Figure 1 (cartoon, rainbow, N blue to C red):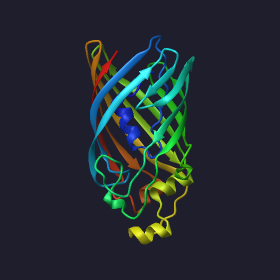
Figure 2 (figure 1 turned 135 degrees about the horizontal axis):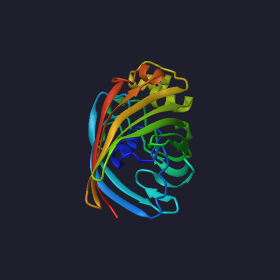
Figure 3 (figure 1 turned 180 degrees about the vertical axis):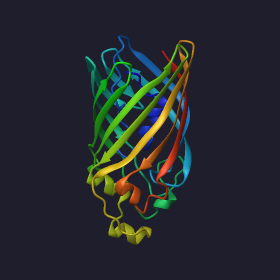
Figure 4 (figure 1 turned 180 degrees about the horizontal axis):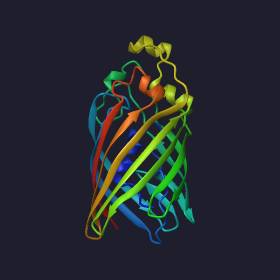
Length: 264
């Protein structure tokens, strides 16, 4: 199954409130080991629901062993395999923190002053995917907080489809929907009575439900055997209690990322 471009994966991982662990659908071992390194930039909201955006660096270091083992700044450390058209994967990764101040490159915003910090957490991610004839793939994954469990868990449903491909160019589209449990929804979109006093936002209690969707296009331009430029453009849109949160100053935000990569 065609994978999302490195830029698309990195950007989705950077935006998701409890993700930095693995791809939506596991990559299929290709019979040989590969290493991809790359640098780029992404334009993302300060936080999901924020009305300001920032440019952040994207660093790609992705090792895929022929056995199915992988280690990556994008996907974490884990293993994937494929049985027929079904792919299975498991990984350990890190979900980043969310601060109450804008520290430049970190995920935080002055608009969250008084809300406190959501601490980074080790994440266990477990996924299953299915590839149809023609390269269309669907998948789902669970992302479980292993350390700071007060931030809760999320579950994603996703799909991706190739639109065009030749020796030099590849174009695809992707979509995903994220379901947040009650802890996760409250941590990222709720406002407790104590937080209301320190932040000025009205108290807001959430329940479990779908928190956001992502939709976009990803493209790759190859330059010979080793070099490529990956790009992604899309949108992220809040849903349900997340969209109604007093922290949600902008419900839909554009996404953009570009990386230059070298594979060997």
